[in-house]
Length: 199
Image (cartoon, rainbow, N blue to C red; front, side, top):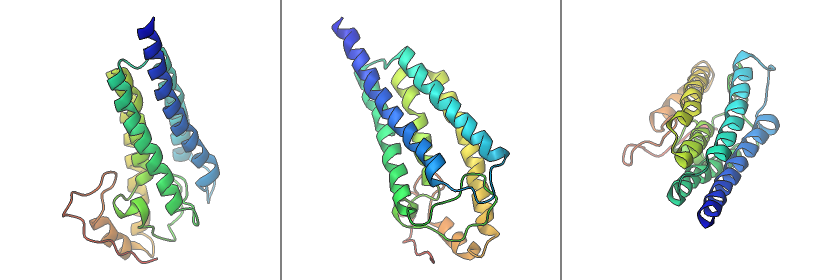
């Protein structure tokens, strides 16, 4: 009984962390990111899959449970990292919110402070970290499917955004910025010169 209670408590802790991440991202989806020209198929797809995978992952976690104290502790790391990165990126964009993934508008400004000093797409990195939470906690490889599917979608969205920058008045500045930052993961130490972006 004590073991079962310990497992339940660990599962509850991971579920609470995951729920906090998902609620934060849901807030961003409806209250932060803008839709300059309305919705489209790409936006609808990322919203639908993100919501379905989020609910499905949380449900799987509650049914399967965290498999050990170590698994639960390790699962909390990407949850905390993803949540912190998300709100750090929000802070960096608080005065000029970004458009939603797959929007067809051209960018009007370039952000390179906060997490953008190291990553070109910190929001997607935050989401990818969060998709790791449930497979790490449950030790269930099949639950990596949401991360794999969403990573393909995030990569497509990121590449579209970079093509938009290349077609905008910020093309030259973005090309220089792109050379010193990673897409989803930071450049290796010693390979990232100081970032100096135009406003």
